[in-house]
Amino acid sequence: MAKKTVATLQKGEGRAFAKVIKMVKSPKTGAYIFEEEMVQNEKVKDYLAK
Image (cartoon, rainbow, N blue to C red; front, side, top):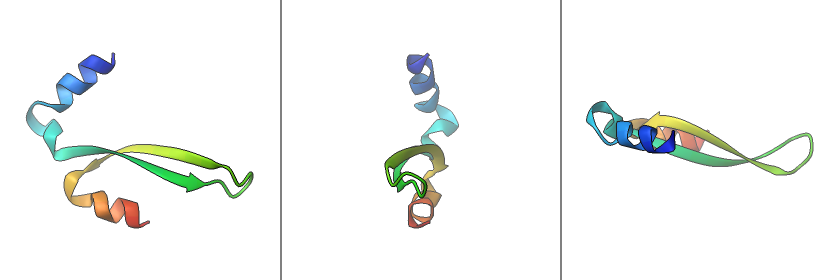
């Protein structure tokens, strides 16, 4: 399944997106969690600034 996703993202409009992984501290437990999201290349800095 991962191979198909990677192959799809390398062609056409998939190049306009980036997979962003952000580390966020949980308010309940204090542990860090990782949030993954597909974001357009132009909006990566805005997403990380949140």
